[in-house]
Length: 154
Image 1 (cartoon, rainbow, N blue to C red):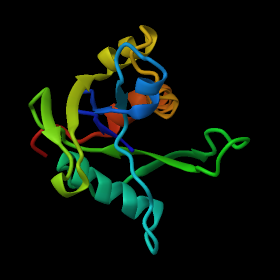
Image 2: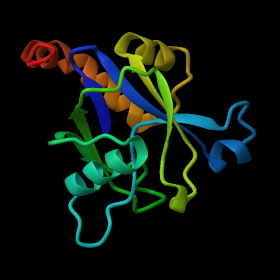
Image 3: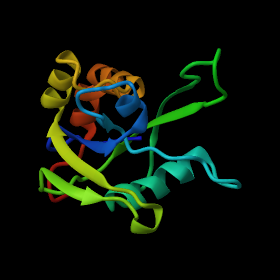
Image 4: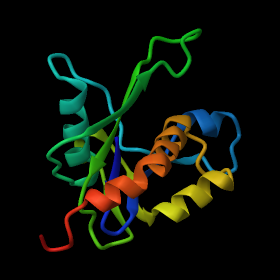
């Protein structure tokens, strides 16, 4: 789930240590990702997205906009991704810590401009393919989302 603030034109990126890049010898095993998690039994993908937004970033959201669903690599695993955009009023801070202590989450949260996020993709600093795809989807729909956003304070 990609939180997006259409008024400030910023997205929320989650930075966390990942063992896969570390095992591959990546220079920086801290990856930039969307808010993500596993759909618990009895939970819809939308409910999981709303829960993860609260747990990881302290965001309370009303609704998610479906972007796409799909397999990241159907030849080698059964993972199935449900990707959403979440319209949100992001905090004014540029960075803060998040995650649940009881789940040993050590998350660095970054509210960055859409342009900066796309520059990070262009420089290869965002290597997580679902986040890249979500940002490209947002690039296509961004103007209409910003035009439909109520003015600040409304």
